[in-house]
Amino acid sequence: MIDLIADMTLAEVLGQVCGLVALGFCIAGFANKNDDRLMVLLISANVAFALMFAFFQSWTASALTVLVILRIALARRYQGNWSIMLGMLAVNLLVAWATWKSITDVFPLAAAVFGTLGMFMLRGIPLRIVLGCAALSWMLNNIVIGSVGGTLAEGMVLVTNIITIIRLYRLKKKYPDFTPGS
Image (cartoon, rainbow, N blue to C red; front, side):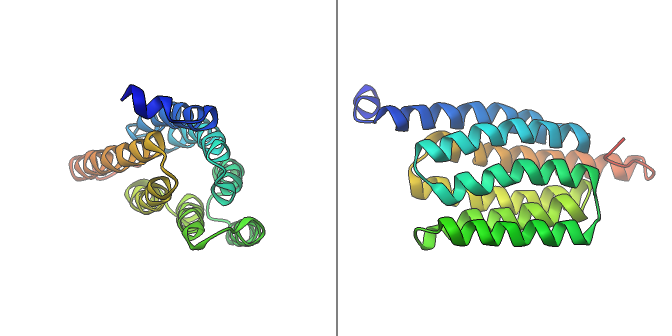
């Protein structure tokens, strides 16, 4: 283990640390049954992810993650607004095109598209299912770039998300009037 760390550059070590910080925010967010708190915690996680990707020189992922922060803020304010969602999708495509280095940049682009559709158009369980698809896309990207912290973070997001979906399903079954935003 020490040899592994000793072979890393400072940027790679800092990238791993940022991935672990993001992990904490992700777990707290997806474990939460309140959609608004989920969004706020995801903003914090994505600041750490953007830094992580920059340290790993994964520029498409870093740039799209910065847009994730903007998207979360816009989606909270303009939930269900097709025009803003389509504008955000167009900006994501433009940024991906401008920063594209290899075919593996398709993973952050897919994550950005899933996240944008989910955050603007969905709530509760459907939101978390689509965000789970985004997490899987980010996980694949993290595996490709070699980010242990990021891979672990997205794996934990998937597991935590599944648990929260089950919790929401049970609440909805027990209390039919329950809505996740409350």
